[in-house]
Length: 387
Figure: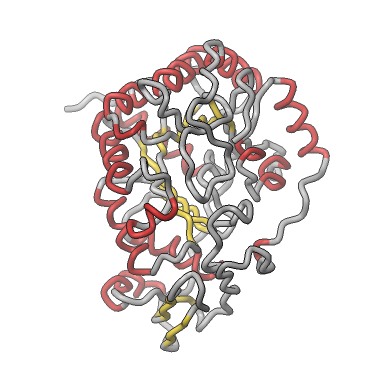
């Protein structure tokens, strides 16, 4: 995450209609990654056609195996320890270009904003910055500098034990820049700042408060760190006026110590999300998981169940991509068909919105029409007097 101290980070989004549900369902297929040095093994039972109305029986009939739609799909290559394996076709993106892309880039530079899109090497930068049919672009930007105090093995952001102190003018400058940019849904995120007493929560909250003062109608999502598990820091941010509290568990329970910095943890992340939900009525919570790190279907089902047990509303699932040869290698390229299955599965077990696809990232289309509608509904329900 490279961000100069004078350059804040933010995310704006486009309203996009929610896609209709697929018309298929699934039966048994099981994938095992034996180790990082061996090829994937696939045990397959050919699926039998079923109707979508039978999807409710999915968890019972397929408690152990992860099903695929429409028969056995073509599997992506197993990368093992070879960072030079070619990506499958569905992950290949054109180099970002176009007039809209150039306009957004110039606009962000003029407003003195740095994006996570660039710093984290997001594969969607061309799609998001070029915007949809209405020409509205999406960008994601950071607060608290460009240097993280943690060293997660999946992340391309630079790290340091002692990063530069936060810019005290960043909250005001960021809020003014966003208000002038003309967007109606913003995602604020940041690097981890374990060097700060509150983990940067107060800085985050101040940014939200100034933004809401300048533009009360704007919807704000905050994608946060775990604040070292400090629930008082979580409270500070939750009560700042934000609309969506997002924190990523990143991967399944078994892989936490392999994938994330040792100071992060599965239970700690769940605790943060649980507290955010309970500490303010109507708070919408969100989390994200990367696939392709060696997780099993049962482990992913367990993680999704754990998120639903604490009433997380929104889930995003995307393919892990190795940013450099020094980072964790990809164990599996998950097919678009299986991502489609996990979307339906997530909605089946109770998530209100699921974005699932190979190139989906935490803030991908964050302000999609359905999410914006959800925010407004929650706000109206919370404001309505109780009988």
